[in-house]
Amino acid sequence: MKTSRVQVFSDINITPLTDIFLVLLIIMMVVAPMLNYSGIKLAVPTVGQEKSITEQPKTITLTVNESGEYALDGKSVDPLMLSMQLRKLKQEKPDGVMIEAHPQSTHDALTRAMDAAQLAGITKVSVSLAQSH
Image 1 (spheres, rainbow, N blue to C red):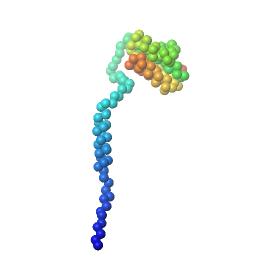
Image 2 (image 1 turned 30 degrees about the horizontal axis):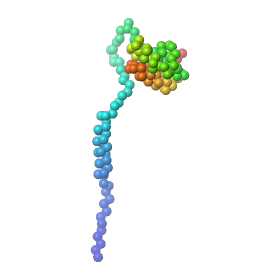
Image 3 (image 1 turned 135 degrees about the vertical axis):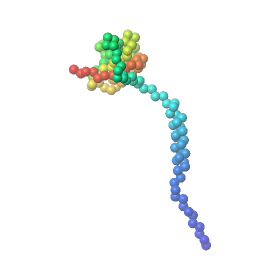
């Protein structure tokens, strides 16, 4: 009697794996242009840009103290009314807002100040570390 030996196929079939990767690649290529990345627009000054010294910028000064309280141009303001107050001051001072944060203030307070400026329609926002005395 003759016994037939069955040859064992021990190679890995990578065709299904390749098919999956190609489908994922096509999906990413189709979806990537549809993604909308909107973030903070930053304007970085270049060397040689000079403003006239006599021209004073008309910016709103928003101060965030160490306990998370806000002050607009030196006057204390309620956090719930911050966006509305910024919208009012935007008419008088169209050059944007300067947020001066105390070194011990929380990240949350600074983020809320930036969100209030965005809600007020202010597009030019500067952030600086307030000088602690």
